[in-house]
Picture (cartoon, rainbow over the protein chains, first blue to last red):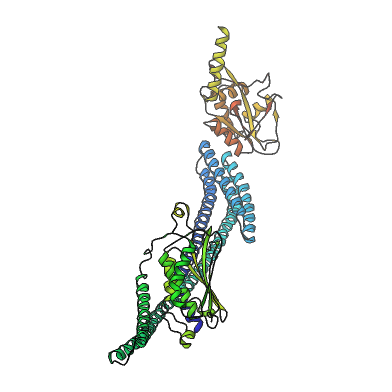
Length: 467
Length: 168
């Protein structure tokens, strides 16, 4: 599970925000999909409902008007008043025109061949009935009631019966169509339900996995932090014990009167001085790290000449290389603009980097301290980059992302008995970021490492008061 | 002054015609069209043939369809024109003639009496053998206008005219 652990560790380093954001995006996408699916199902249901209501109304009106045509004709038989008979004839003709229009509309909206054929047959049967109806009406109006009744019984009743059967068939076809639509709607609803269940289940599983991953990454992070702190305590204890042992031993010798003579006393004094300074430096580093934990704006930024920075760094680092054959090669590009920063902060940062270079230089006992102007890696414009490059043991690519973590110590350097607190690079990065800058690293195993401090260029009025 | 009077009279006549109000002022007249069903093959009749039809002497058309007479109610100007100018009788004489015909069996069906011009029009539209009469302004495409003595109601010399304020 090393890949999973690395992934979880990465998720933890990014505060699990990315994972939560991904879950949020997924939930939003699923929500949109569910809403869209519900909308589609709703639209289908509305379409079927509207179609059903419209179809039922159309069939109802068609049946009513057909009956009205016949009813008005028969009403004309019930009176001998020509004026009333004409009125009934007029009503019958109005109704039959509505029936003709409805049949034509039914034919136009027919979806299946059976419906088209039925519309054609209905139109023919209706036309046949109207022929008889016209004769019946004429007989009624002429006053030949018997003839009218005879005509209606012999021709009108059978013709209207055929129309009635056609209308029943229209209703049967409509019922079949409605049943098909209902079946389609049920199938659509089932599909939507299954999809919703599937999507909700998938979302639930994914969310659970995300929560599990976040919790696991946080737990791993907490364990890792505890482990680092334990290592730090052990390392600090070890770092303190060495000078303390020397100091204790020297003090015992002095107290016991073993050390006599000026030369020996001076030698012991130098040892005491060196070890006490070493302890002081160590304690200062720990205190500095603790103080930069929550105070990003503790530095006062002002324009600084790079040469001034180099002087300060070289002066502070003199103690590191004193009495060794270690060489620091300086180089500053011509015409570099002043940078914005705090002199002590930048010195501390570069001093840490040089200290690391000295510590991990291996057999190549030189380091290059260079300053140059370059396009800003974040944003636009230019920046000044001060790099500390060594040709030492280098950093494994898998560790590059972790070397700036507080208390992190490479297992390789532990094995090589190179002592340290694991705070130097973390401290350097915090200082750089506190000044609005950045710290980056390029390294190759057994070739060397180059740490670069990216600093903002002083602009406008700031550059007038350069230190 | 005379031209103005003529213009005002013309305006009054036009308004009266459009509103279907009393059709004309005293003494005015309008052609009376003889109308049949559009399926009737007959296009023209002589005044004598028309008289035979309205007196029920002739009961069938040439295509064997029975003739159905359509009349307006007694007292209507259109009926007065037909009774007087076509039948050559007055209302009482016509009534007597019809009753006599029905009693003797010479007349099979008495004329149909309708209250309005639109009723006449619809009746003739529904009955293929029907014949009736309408003012020219009441005629539309649902019926066919016959020539009488080869003259249409709009032709000069057409004899059947409705006198609105006559003293028959």
